[in-house]
Length: 161
Image (cartoon, one colour):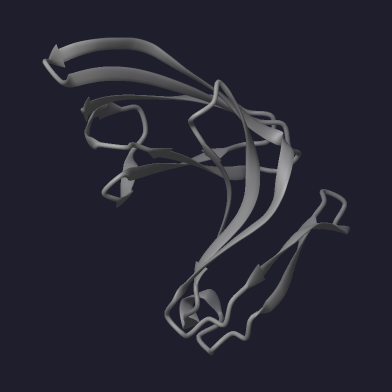
């Protein structure tokens, strides 16, 4: 099971959502059919007290199926996004250099999942952190951040129009 703060990189300033992603299997301490319904999430504060974070609804879920819950919008994890360079390397192929600066103002460490979608064929040229391809039009990075920390993800991508 992984907790992540997700945001798409389509805006100049992006806020995050708190999400929980897992597969309904024994490794996630589940592995039985899950009935549809509400799921509530609580987060431990530094003093050990639990604080209600948010909720989402899941559909009936068979074993070994993925579950993605979007629990709440958060204000203390956010990012700024900018294209720092854009040039044509072919008649219909622009190359873009993108920087996403991620900020964690929470009192606990987090893992931020940066998701970038493309509308056409694309290929990653370089990146400052290892990404994983989600599907044919989506790539993601999982960036761990300590409390009060910030980091900049830089990647270069060719987009074929």
